[in-house]
Image (cartoon, rainbow, N blue to C red; front, side):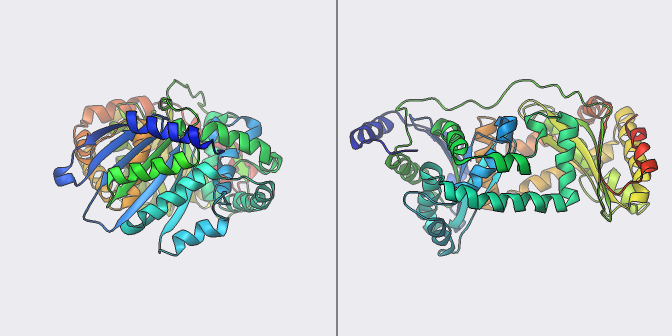
Length: 459
């Protein structure tokens, strides 16, 4: 993002002070847990959660762009760009960026998903101004030089190779392709060797300018933070960089739409010489905006969310057929996935798949018991609270909530929504989701006869 003239910057600054809008979204007792939001006229949203009792702060910037925003030729561009924003700005070299945070004992990182990207730094509360300056500089002043693109290409190709070496990780990419096919949600976040090799600095720069406009960004900070100070520091950083190209602009709305996954009965197998076979049996789930997601969370927890879950008990405890077996859900703006993963000896694949399919079919037809549902509700409530015990998790919650839902929900409200789930709610979701014909993804050294029987699991 290039700098504008001083007069334009001064004018933007004046307008920002005139119309910036601040709201209190969650009112915590004595300011503890209070969530506030300020929207600047240039479309940048800033949300904070204040916890005066801690000595740390996590600062992050969320971008409304993920791998599903890429064309086939740009597959991997979002993740590539994530790497490049650490390579240097007009103010700092790559070493300056990393050493600034290292010098205060902080940690800094980023991650790319299918629908968003996040850059963050966790530091002592006294070092929050430094974290704000560094992360904002990265997001607004990245140079994306040709030499950096070439150097980082090698690192990304190594990351792809590392993922390919981990079949337990790679099978999740395969399952996305099995369910979504060759469209944006079905392609890997990292891209492929061919697409990464084909990406140029010019194409990545254009992608950067299109998707890193302030209207596409959410700033989030949690910990011992003062909302007004964070707003002033962030605004000053963005204005100094000339990032507000439009003095008055509205933030981009959360994603919406409707997508139908037609992947019933599909089987994809990658033959590979591994010690274990890695399998995912699954079907379309619920979108993250679906109000039934709370019941789906309880169902998922009871089926494969812990050591007392049905799948863990049936596959591992009673029969010892796998060390790792679990279920999971993935919710996107307009669709979702439900999957059951297991890693087992190749000779045990069909036994494991039969048990998993039988359990899914049984729960779809008969539901879970009241005891199972009650235990899952308690487990989900406990894990929700325990998962928010550090400032990084809190920053993730408020940043993602603003970007993906456009609203905030207090922890008490979340617990109340989980507690309100009834056995009938869970059984209804189980009938709909688990009653669908599944698809299957497998990576492992299966012989021809074994491979030919895989379709039995999705028949």
